[in-house]
Image (cartoon, rainbow, N blue to C red; front, side):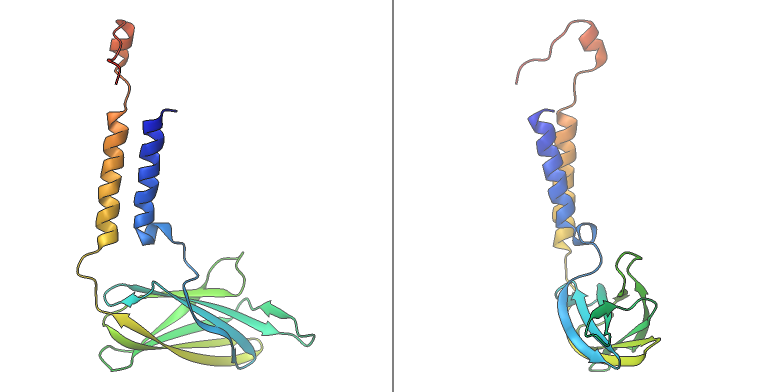
Length: 187
């Protein structure tokens, strides 16, 4: 395959990486809780993006674990995990979300997403209920004001357009020119 095609593919991949929502899978983020007891459970929580922004989606990932009698830690599947978001200054209404399991493969991981209506400090409460009992932990996250311009989106779009122009610019001559024996001029 020619160099221009590889260049166009590289530019397209860079464009996709410039748009965080396309490049990033759910899960992970900034650690907020690390192995904190919540009733019979041990919780971990991550938030993304970093920082949170008003008028943008806030993502919370929670890992629910438990320690057995032998001291072994294991993930807890089938728990009911609820995430509550409350603006510390009361500027926005409290929201309660049911966190959903990430996947059958990622046992013990749950996630919730919500569009933040306001900037400022937010109190996040994570409540877990399962066969072993109930537990709750809280942490604070600060949301920055809404971004005036979504620069990653615009940069990604510009790079994608340049990649498209590169791909179209490297197209081969029409079949009729090949049949007639006309060769394109060397570059």
